[in-house]
Length: 80
Image (tube, rainbow, N blue to C red; front, side, top):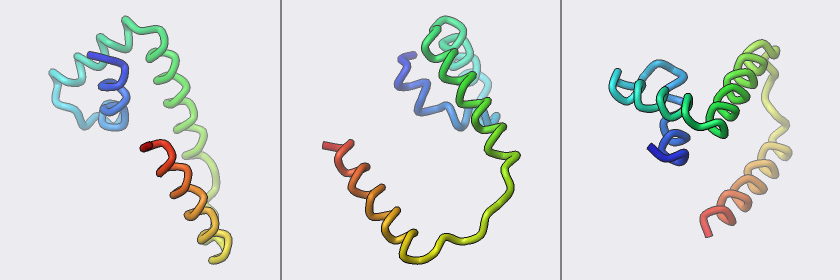
């Protein structure tokens, strides 16, 4: 398994949604790859912290539109 393949399955791995064989493959990769082990640890910690934050209301419409525009530009640049 490559690091990219592990990253593609990370959300399902942490959510317990992978079949046993895939879960074990990801686990073996993480245990053998210091980079991925560090990433998974940081990702998991960040997720736990974010879940403790209070929910906020909707964004002002103009701000949301601008944010979506900037994100779309950024994501389209990554694809190039």
